[in-house]
Length: 129
Image (cartoon, rainbow, N blue to C red):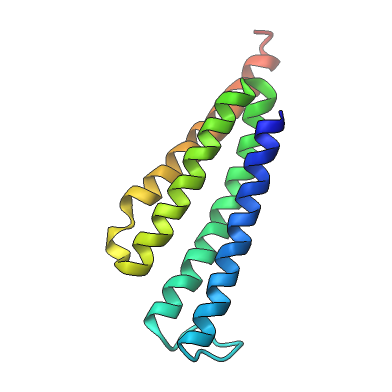
C-alpha cells in the first residue's frame, strides 16, 4: 500500500508543480491575474494544469478502488505510467498542442484500467467471487 501512497503523493505534487509553472508563465508572458487568456503559451500552461485537475478527479479514486480489490503493486505501476504520461503530455502541449496524443494516451489508459478494474473487483466481490 505504501507504493500507492507514494504514487498519490507524487500525483498531487505534480499538480502543484504544474500550478507553479502557470504562475511562472503568468509573469513571463504578462498575463495579470485573474485573466486566463492573453498569451497563447501561457494558456497552454494553464490548460495543462486544468486538464491535470480534471484527470486527478478520476485517477485518484480509481487508484484506490483498484488497490482495494487487486494488487497494489499493479496499481502503482499503472499510477507511474499515469505520472509519466502527464509529463509527456505537458511537454508536448507547451511545444505543440496537436502533438499531445502520446501523453494523453499514457494518462487515459491507466485511468480506464484502474476505474474499470476497480468496478469489476467490487462487482465480483458482491457476486461472491
